[in-house]
Amino acid sequence: MHERPFFPSRQQPTSGMRAQRRDTKLLAPETKHYDSREKWEVSGMESNARSGKGMAPMGETIMHELKTLFLAGTLATGILVPAAQAQTVREESVRGHVSYLAGETLKGRESASPDEAMAAAYVGAAFRGYGLQPAPGMQGYTQPIDIVRLRLDGAPVLTAGGAAIDKPLLFASAGQPAQGKLVLYAGNDPKALPAADVVMLTGKEGSPLRLAGAVDPSRTRLVIIRATPEVRDYYQRIGGAPRLPRYFKGRQPTPRPNVVALDDAAFDKLAAQEGTDVSLTLPGLVEETRVTTNAIGYLPGTDPKAGVILLSAHLDHLGVRPDGKVMYGANDDASGTTAVLELAQALASGKRNKRGILFVAYGSEEAGGFGARWFAEHPPVPLSDIVANLEFEMIGAQDPKLPAGTMMMTGFERSTFGETLKAHGALVTADPYPEQDFFRRSDNYALALQGVVAHTVSGWAVIPSYHTPEDTVANLDTAFMTRAIQSLVAPLRSLANSNAKPEWKEGGRPSE
Image 1 (cartoon, rainbow, N blue to C red):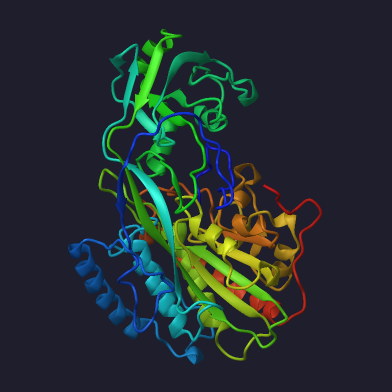
Image 2 (image 1 turned 180 degrees about the horizontal axis):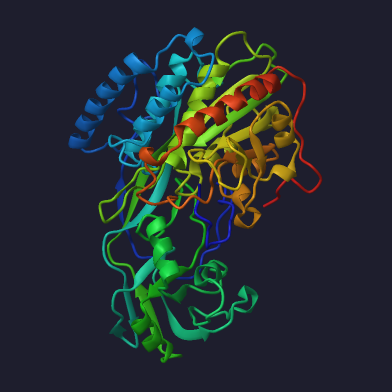
């Protein structure tokens, strides 16, 4: 699940749109191309890849081959199970999937990395083993997507009046230098923020991150905040590295200001210099092309006109932090991917359903929802044919606020979907944390913006291990996961064999 963003949500510009850009010269970044597609065909699975020009270094290619051979052996003994054996969800199967996805081999499944691609290969091979077909228009079970990202190999340099400021913590950046006269702002109303190139937030009320996120990048290039414990904790939760632009290849990045945090001494010293010239430069900026991967399987229905149900989760997590700690992401979201796998196996068993079902595991959710957004722009079936989308996110622990065994559904009150599932035995209920805006923070939102009735189900969404190295398999409640997933088999099968279609309630469909 996305961290609650301190930047407002903005739609990624399409190929026919250009983001507004300031008259500022960009640093000329070094350009690299990194392709994680070429060695991920498993057990006869063809990737839906285009032929990429940039290839991984030879050592990485050999390692990919070794990993793929290992994976093929794992699949041959553990996943290619006859459908007749898959009538119910078994805890040992749940634990097996999540242990691999959140284990040492995949090193936290960093967005758009070979480890994420390996996870996609695992899921795609499972889909094939369960008897699913490639989605319409696809030749295989994986969908690669080119993403451009910026990476900073040097330390950011912040100066005031020509003198360097010690240890600036670069929180986020547009990948552009910034300079201007320092302006202080002591308020907490985003609408009253001054239009200035460099703004320092000196107010003591509210969250400096939220206020920084409300800054209009067309008016302000650099925001300076105090490095409070909240700020430093958030920095670790987003991976211990600055958030730099990522965007679909061939498009423009979404505009954002640079945000820098300073410790108390440096902050207070700079705050006494209002009007001084402040400059931020980003030496060692590298531009690279990487590939994120969706895994997609399709269970055709008997009536092509009856529509399609979409069940989804995200593959990726945060990988390895700069300090070497692995962010395993067992709950977020190996647990959700496991739910998609278990439901694929269960719903592919027995008599064919009236409606088709798409099973999707998205890449790069943590990096900006790229896999889901690409899917929404390039769906294998018309979006108008998708009856409903149920996303699985962090279902690895019971929320103490909810009845035993029950999951919450984000945006429950927005449509009839949750009520329908609940009436048929699904252990789901309303989201007890509306202030967290979870409905907008998962991959369901990309589909909801297109009109698809799309929601996310979660277990304990505010669990303390969220985005920490403690999100491990050892801290999952696999018995809860198993019961929760099993409770959805019959309701989803019923929906797949009915004419009922969940609908948005008045005012429930999001518009932005």
